[in-house]
Image 1 (tube, rainbow, N blue to C red):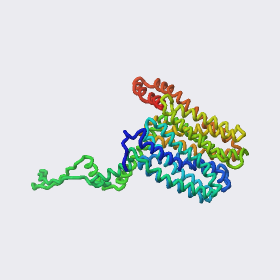
Image 2: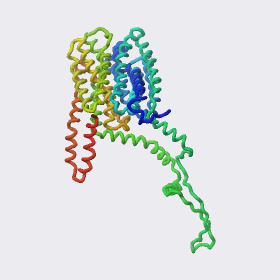
Image 3: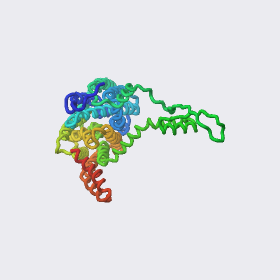
Image 4: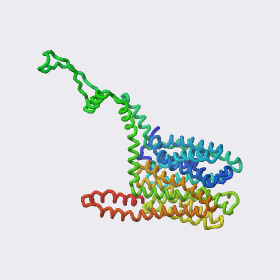
Length: 511
């Protein structure tokens, strides 16, 4: 498994093969979850459950994919993008095929929501991480193309699943879609790593090491010297042979003395072994806490949670909204879900290109897209025609293309070295929002028998996230100025030059 030298591989060459493979991986894995709105009415009819309960299936598959991002990112760091993508193919395909035999909604939540969701999370982490490693100056464009795979998949799979349901039924549709997902393993082939992952480095070091592995307990090394010493005046004149132990290290002498006094404690040996094993996890936890203390990154996480809480329900409920209002009978040839997916793909490309422009601040651009999405969601209950829903669906889809900016902005805030861990934390916030959003909207409908209040709630959440991020970016210099004034003269030279300036630089560097 060879690694590619980073100097000659950035922004071109084999990087475009990585973009193509990552695009196809996201297309195959997220196609069905992004068009789950087509399956939602079928599940309502098949299992006769409430809208809130049935909504857990669609929310879990996308929510679990993001909630598990920290674990998935750790898998990519340790094993690399290629083996993780292969394993994700088994998860996605197996979960979809297992869902064809689901006897209840509870089983469907496990098979489609959790199993497929974990597979999608692995694909998401692997494709974004390796794309960011291969691109620097064109990173925004590359990420825009890769994340467009989910939108193209949602657009095509919406129509495809609709046709497959009519021809083969719901069970046959899920079996065929699951079989297509096995092609994810082929997408893993071109994903050559820029640097060898941690697991392979450990294996190489173990193979190159010629010494035996260090046991849990090692006896101190000593040299035995026989010397004839005179005894004390009160004793006989004969000589006694005394064995002197010359210990190599003072620490080993102290340990050996303690063990000779109290014996070898099994508990202490096990405790040292556990402490040694847990040290990397403790370091990871400390780094996570350090990231959460970053004000710019934490504001980004809060905005992501509110956006995910309100923006995902339209993907799941848009078709049911049209049918409940009597605007259309059945499902249109080009469903509203397909319109959302198609315009989201266009939005990802356009926003990715804008992010690469020097005069554009990506954090402000992201905040503006949140504001646009929230406004469109608030207007969904207003039109009483199918054409009006199509226009608003296109607007929601275009502004939802801001998912292509998340990795770009995260890299600008924390750096490429900590991208995998920070992006996993960010997606975890988004996953909780996506998991909670659709059930809440479904419960609103079960309570009021109308989607109006539900979409007012969704639009308000997204609009608040955009306004919060805009307000944070504009007031951060004032916060820094207040912190400068509050510092003592002795500390002013240190704190003013470090933390406050650093936060301002982070907001400015996103441009």
